[in-house]
Image 1 (tube, helix red, strand yellow):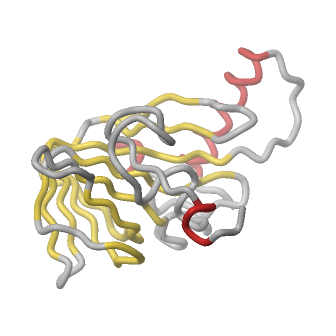
Image 2 (cartoon, helix red, strand yellow):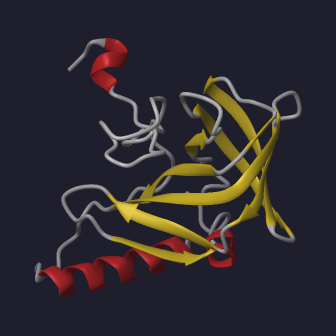
Amino acid sequence: MLSRFFAGLLTGVVLLGFAHIGLAEEDPEINLLFVQTSKSVEIDTAKGSLCLRGVSGETIYFSDRPYRLAGHVSLARFLEGWSEGADSFAESPPNAAISIYDESADTNAVAIITLYTPEVDGDDLLYSFALVEGELPSAGDSTALFIDKFGVGGGAGRGYHGVGAGRRGPGVGGWAGVAVINECERDGNC
């Protein structure tokens, strides 16, 4: 059973999207992915704690093909839905790619993590996390957290879905600062 918040968000997005693009109502498999941004980040890998300093008050969501729906929801509302339902993020923690900008570096610091227990502290958002892949600095500048899917069936998937380790700048991702993993280059299975 989907959490009430995410089910409501997904239903609203689907209905608005279908109305906008003129599709007949059906039972689509739409998965929402989320992006949270902050002015800076502090990380304690030994404790598994992550603090997004000056986090945006809104969380961006988007869907993958074929629907390509997008929008944003307040951070408070996103967090309300974190633990609602049997297949919530609290029950099935999401993977996320974290991309940390460093003006003095040639590449973003990028890692794949699993997120747990979000908590707001003033203008900051704290997560507990487990490192899945990559290395993390103890602090950094502008940060983007690309959170794995939530949709029909709920839960977290593999964690990449168009984000992951890669070089900063135009190219695969198309926008400066977007980190992208190319699965073909990664394991040779194209």
